[in-house]
Length: 448
Image 1 (cartoon, rainbow, N blue to C red):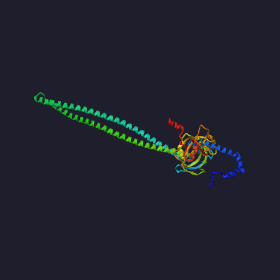
Image 2: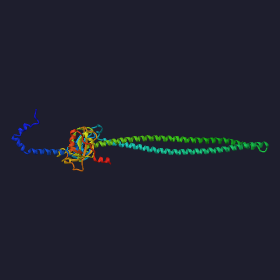
Image 3: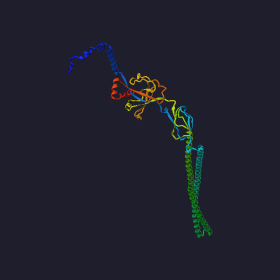
Image 4: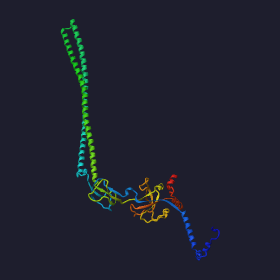
């Protein structure tokens, strides 16, 4: 067994050497101990320094508005390339001609297509005017028929009134004749009586008989005249009905012709509108032969090339980069970090090729970074499995460099809560997410 309690003979033997004695007399090990102690204290102090939790992301430089991003100019119609007016790298103003194409579809190959279509439109317009004139003429004809109908009916009604008065007059004459017949009969009978008594001569009786016969004949004539007046009254009433039916038929016929003319007029108007629409389409199509720049910018790349090549509708011709744009950065963050991102928060950005010294936990000590502000947070995951964030320059800080080119790489840091360094090391080693963070202004509004 080892004698642990007794003195170690090996240690006593080492102390006998001169080298060991010289090392014990040197003061360097004391300085080294002090350095180790100081570094340890410094590291312990660093562990309690504040550390800003952050969310890092990587992306690229883009523009703030969609209409300021690089775009491709497409052709709206199929055609054949005839002439180029630009080359790659040229600056074009809005409306400048980029390319001229010719027609290839057989429906539009007629060189006089516009003129012929215009003549068809003019002819149809004249037809429409003719039908309109016919409608007006028929309206005037119907008005004349109505006026004539009123006059005829008034004339017939006057005849009815005349017939009624004549019937009334003849009836009164008939009554008078009957009274005369009664008187003549009485006188004739009285003459016969007086003749028998010898008071009247026979000649007087003959006169009274003659007068009685005359009155009897007159009453027959008056009855015929009365019946004739009644027939004339009935004929006058029938004439009123006939006139009303006749002029109603004329009016209905004219109204039917008017409706036919109106139908033809509306049909012609529809044809005119169709031809005008076709003419305007041809006119607009002729303007599509010249492909123009939608906005001012630089021609990046000519996608199509050559002369005489045939292109289809929607074919990309050239790519244009707008000359004026508001720069921004699109970055992508992990789904775990998305709940910690809020619109309006400030973000630190640094760009590829730009000198940077970045301390992610101490943004105040980072050089070469620029301030940004979150303006949009995409709620749908991208193809790379991350969520897209759009960052605009922070107007309260230094402007972003003008030398940054569109599409260059960029990295971002979204600053969260301040925690001690030891807590951040412990969180990272355990794989815990950052503290759930809410903006201060949002929290204050909720409290209010």
